[in-house]
Image (cartoon, rainbow, N blue to C red; front, top):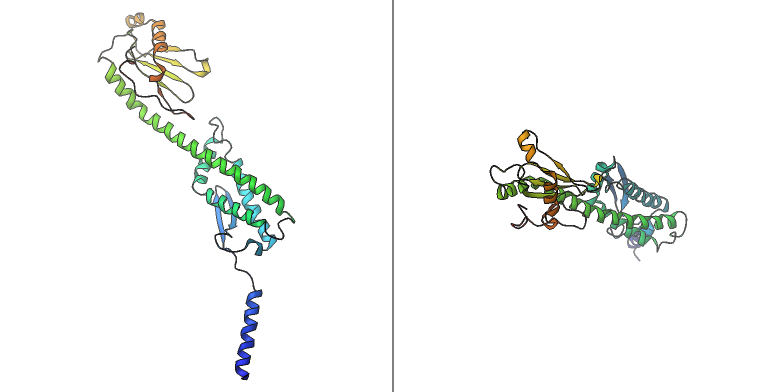
Length: 273
C-alpha cells in the first residue's frame, strides 16, 4: 500500500474512533421564568438527544429546578379562588401568566421523567425521589391550570355582566316604568343577583329591596333620598317586600357563578308585578 494512502487511512480511522468516543449531542438549555421563579431545563425528546447521556449531577440540578418551580407555582396560586385573601390578586395574576406558558414546560418535564426511567442511574442517588415528586407536581400543576382556565373564564363573564348591567337596568326601566311613577306603586322593573348571593329588586318609584347572605337573606327596604313627608306616608314597606318576594326568580338577572348561568331577559309577564 502506498505510504501516503496508508497514513491517510490510519488518520481517518483514528478520527472516526475519537468522534465515536466524543461527547454526545445534548439538548440546548432553555430558560423559563414565572413570576419571580427561574428554572433551566432541556427538551431531550424534542432535540432527539438521549437523556441518559447527560451528566447525572447536572441532570439532578435540572430536574430539581423544575420541580422547585412547580412547587412555588402551586404555593403561590393557592389563594386565587379565595377573594377574601390578601394574596388573591397576586395569585390570580400569576395564574394568568402561567396559563400561557407553563403547559409546555410541564409537557417537557413529564417526557424527561419518563425517559429517565430507562437510564442506568435512574434508581440511584436522588433520581427516584425526584421522579416521583416531579410526577406528582406535574399532575397538580396541570390540575391547577385547568382550574385557572375555568376560573379566569368565569371572572371574565362576571366582569362583562357587571359592565353591561347598567344598560340592562336602564332598558328595563324605560320599558316598564311610567315617566313619573307614583310613590308607593310597588312596581318592580328589574331585579339582579350577584355572585355572592346579594339580591336587589328595583322599583319604579326609586325604592330598592335588598337581601344579603350576611343578614340571613332577610329582605330590607331602602328608600330613595329626598322623599317628602307626604310621599313617605305613601310608602308601605310590607307591600314592597311582598312584591319582591313574588318576583319570579327565573327572571332575576343573575351574575354568572361556577356551574351556573345568567337568567334570561325579563319577560312582559314578570315586570310590573
